Length: 408
Image 1 (cartoon, rainbow, N blue to C red):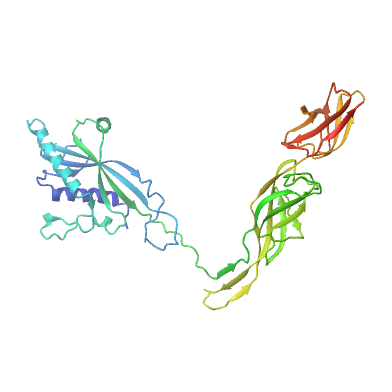
Image 2: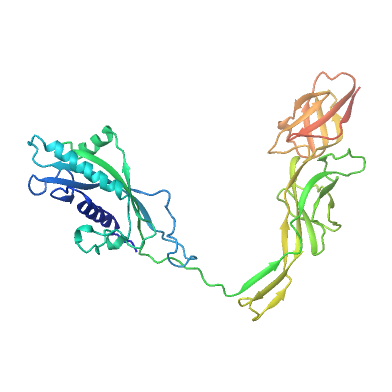
């Protein structure tokens, strides 16, 4: 398991790889800030961990095959490490100091290109026996391998790094990314409780499905989706009355389910209730049916302590939409001919929009007269003698039939 020593283990493994596989190794491969002078003025190759970030691809993911597959919580911390590799060519006043540094840097880049993955089987040639492994023990046997990738940096990126180091001179450097290092949590993962009793339930019917809704009140137009309170609503669909269904309900919007007594497999008929939960305008409707399933319960279902039950449960259909329209019952014009009082059903919705249409012209409701769903008033003027067509629109739903106002 990779622990907190994994980051240092990567640095140590890179150090051993460069020491072992470079053709002309420098005097020392160090792991320190590149501006720090170590020892004398000999040649040097330095590894500097300048940036660490969390891997977005493996964040919150468990290590495959690690522990019980049902356990959860406290995933490992996946990290990507960024190294700055800097070469030093010996004494700075030497005429070939920079040339020597370039040779060392090129040799190191060749090694990292030849060995982009430090595997568990990679061994040290310099040990003589070839039995010493390159990878540090803390990184061995992990699911993710140590992969080395060249990270191109611009001159601006490099200058920012060197500027952050006090009293440093710009050196010959390249950057590499090493991924992915996973540091596992020391907290125990949560294991779910074992299954004590298994249950298999088989429903006898498919889920109900609504395909269309329309008005079937006597005299209604064919397939009219506009209905008034009290009108007969037909719901067409599938799986409303198959064998095994005990009861059925129709639910308007999110109101109280209305029980349906006559149900067949493809149609349900129900009257639109005059309820507060059904304001004028678009109205949602769904069907709920109660099914009786067959259930087998036992210890492991291997034949021990088996019990067959018939539990009942509800299944909900999809939703369909129709319009509830207002109803005009009475019209009364005052003596002065300036105010029209309309009586009826669903004429007003305090949270919606209501307008009165007289001969095709919209008139606003007089809200100062405290309108109610059963009575509204509208100011009128200049109505000529004769008959006038009056309709009411509430929340976009227009009354199905017009009323006639006769002005003497």
